[in-house]
Image 1 (spheres, rainbow, N blue to C red):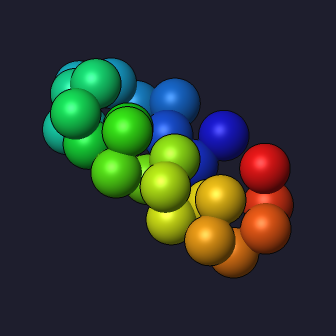
Image 2: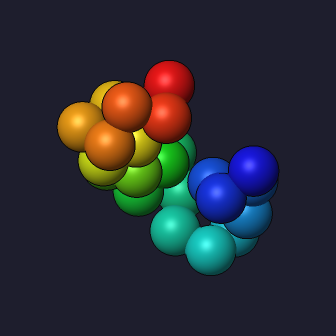
Image 3: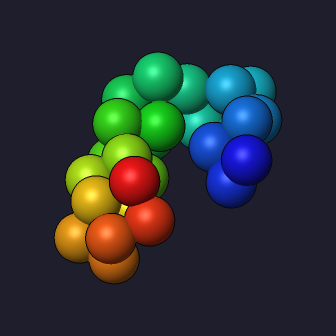
Length: 27
């Protein structure tokens, strides 16, 4: 849900967030 705004950053930014979520253990 935190990366639902594509216009906020784009796919690249979503990838960065994905990595952050994995580190936090949310994924």
